[in-house]
Amino acid sequence: MGNGDMVIGGIDWPAVAAGDWAVPAGAEVPRLVDVLTDMLASPDPVVRDEFGYTAVSVWGRRGVLDRELGRLGDIMAERLTGHAEVQARTFAALAFGVVLGRDVELPGGAVDGWYEVFENWYRTEPDVRGYDETLGWLHAVAHGADAAVAFARAVPRHAPDILELCAHRMTVKDTDYRYSHLEDARLARALTAVLHTPGLTRDQALGWFDVVDDAFAGAGRGPCPPWAANTFATLQSLHLHLTRGLRAGGVPRHGDEVADHVAAILRLPFPWLR
Image (cartoon, rainbow, N blue to C red; front, side, top):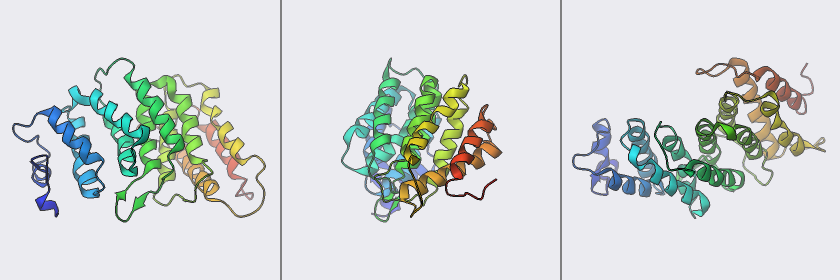
């Protein structure tokens, strides 16, 4: 099925895209969400990414989905709990950026519940490939990093836990995948953004290094395994982010001390550093 023939749920999606994503005439938002959630799990990357996620992102940003964000969040959390297909899980994580990005009232306790599900998924997701020739972009690490930022902004008290969560993700040892699609940069951006959380103390800003230190405990000379390469790449990217700062927000309050700790760890692979 070519892009020009892509009618799903009775909607001509290429026509919607060509019309600047105007909501189809007569379409009811709850029905649109039903169709979009199916599209977000599709193994077809055009259906899932180019049309499904783009529609969720655009209509979410424009406020079209405001009344359905609670239901959308519940569906995405359910997928993270154990959907059999990797693309459904990784795009569920990405969708939380939309769900949490609007300043609307969500069901009481929902965000904490979603965070608990997300945290468990991000720690344990086994398929962290960035791209698949058939499925297209999967990006569990990158999508999870984006979701981590959204959760930190929605529930700032979780910021220290989210820093540790990102550290656990980069140091997962049971993997043969080396970051090859800038996952390190997305993690570094997430860590930097979470470090901007108002009220984050020095100890909280530095506490996540315990996870990294434990991962390298007893490390010696020898080949660099994928998990270590992923961690070093993320820390190098993080040092750049902490040096230059984010376009929105600049350098976080404890950025200099965090950068010093990063540099100390990077002396393991780069002993010639001053």
